[in-house]
Length: 86
Length: 221
Image (cartoon, rainbow over all chains, first blue to last red; front, side, top):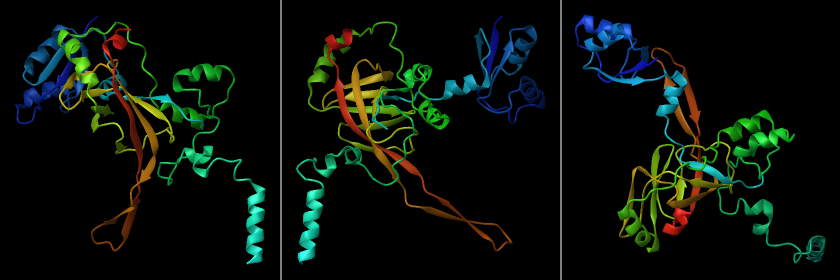
């Protein structure tokens, strides 16, 4: 089963109430919020309503909140090579 | 006068000065030799130097008890990455120009630590804008993310990062430094109470100990 990965790239402020309602129904409350939904005609129709505002990707598996956060976190860029006697 | 000479002779006889190396080479001093002595963090107890975070599980299996505090501190230091699966494929222009970069006398590196770039050259002292948990003065860190390495005439730019097998960059932890105490007065309207908030942050000091661009033969091994 595949999933839509939907990210709100542009805010819905100033758009018709109906469009804002679709964003709310998708759970997209603020910019850069990412949600996952199974690929169904209903979700595809909702995406079509707000296609100018979101970035959509098809993925195999939804990510958890922690995994999304780890994705954004930059690499530490260092590791401990040799430790002194403590 | 006489008593002073007697006391001096007693002090001399107690520890023959020839038997000991100069004080700055004594093991407990040598670590702090070139670092700020203030705010040196007490290292976690029961910590064995040979035991790095990667081998933590094996150490705990062998029955070496680590306190929970020490374990949590060690877990904060990133462990060495796994060896890369596929061999490094260098493009033709890199193969041509990398030896020229390597033979130039002094190099610089734009190393990224937690996503922030630090443009440094060997010998530089870097005051990180944060306190690195779990490290003590004398530790050697290997910096493995660089967006650019260069010399006077050549620069190797990464997309976005240079492959970590091309170079070796090491930094030594010199100690921690503290900023002067900051006092902020918080007031609320229609209220005479003034709350003072104090803050005094610590920062880790690193010295870039080594930067080397590897030769082609060494990379292909």
